[in-house]
Length: 139
Image 1: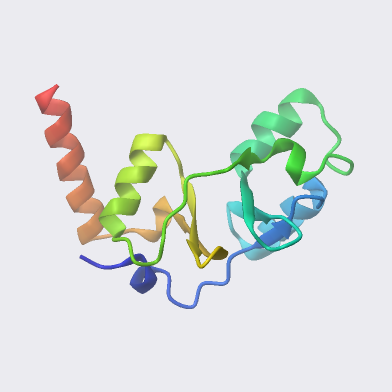
Image 2: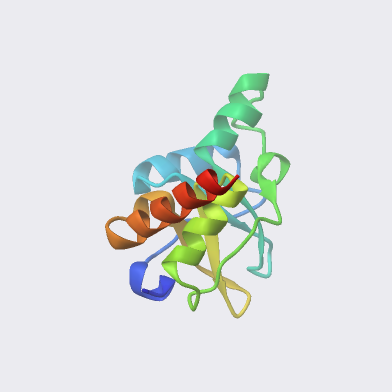
């Protein structure tokens, strides 16, 4: 089974400070064609994740001003994380169990990637689907 480091080689995750305005984060997400931002503190440690779902559900749905709302106010705090040494199946399990589409990958306290469901195709995805179906039948 492939390790996450093999799946996400040469990844350059979008990482922004928690004081960044939501409008800037959304522009950067659009420019980079990515669905998430890893949010870090001033020391570069992961403190949260902000996704397109957060933009809709925590900003737009409540009429908040995206120009004045900061990522730190609307991000998902202390998200689950993965290490590059974990396998792709482990990542898919965690995403499925937690209902996540994006998970930050951290090594030595620093964000080195963000794994998304869309990163997985083929064998890993098929294996996870088989596993999920088996669990559903066992309930």
